[in-house]
Image (cartoon, rainbow, N blue to C red; front, top):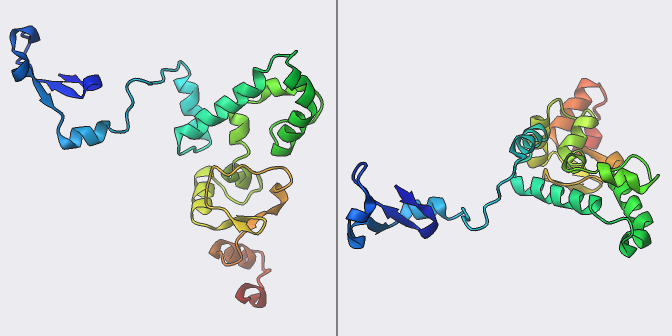
Length: 202
């Protein structure tokens, strides 16, 4: 039987009571591999949520590789939704907030602050680079889009992006394209019969 919170292991013999044994016999330190396995686990600040199924569905749907990304998106969307209506900061910066949310593509218009109530973690996931690639029909599946980004086939403007968690703004969405040296770009141009050897070799 393991007592993980104290990093100790109790050795018991069958169904007998552990109080029958002296402390020196029943307690031993964790072995090296046991410590390594438990190194990443924080038993004091363990998050228990009731939305695990919804969270797993979002993680699987948008191919999020790190749960921390989902948690961060959730915190941001909650911070936007939970601002009180009479908060002076909200009154002062409502226009700036709407402009920023619209620029990120999280709300469809700059109409009213009621749109902020509909900003969720999925709204942030829809602005990730692999999802935008899928929307622009540059990839057939989200898994392939994630692979293209990680392998360095995609650039946003002049910069090559290899992080799938990159959020694409509305203004940068038009500048998402293949890297010039990408084999995928060459294959697409050959398929469309638009390949120019001079441009590809330059």
